[in-house]
Image (cartoon, rainbow, N blue to C red; front, side):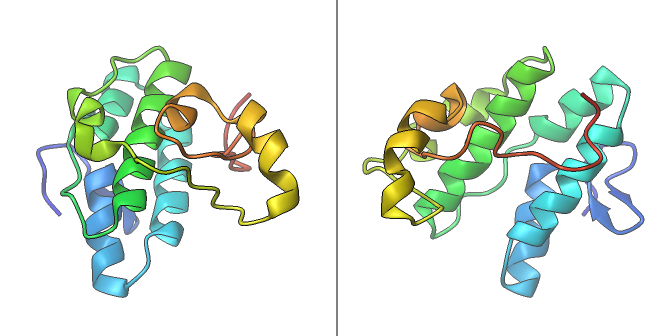
Length: 139
């Protein structure tokens, strides 16, 4: 998992979105590693380290929704924390061609269309207003 980031793994948690995907591939699911990454990101106080955590592009997978979602995560975190948006998030392969509603509930679609943060909405991923909430996040 070495990427040049001074501490790629802290207590076994991924410290980059690339590591999230790589760990997820080994286990067969990405969601738990993304939650651990978010905990690491939110507890990191150094803006330079936070930027490094988003900078390295995760390899494309065979799941276009996952590829777009990771880009939305990086863009959203960068915007929210006044960091530079990584260039890799703007690649056409990081955008969906059809709408995706991860919640899967038909009754929520109208709300999600309005609430989704811009980084998700522009990739046609429709989520709640705070899709990356974690209890450890300050503010």
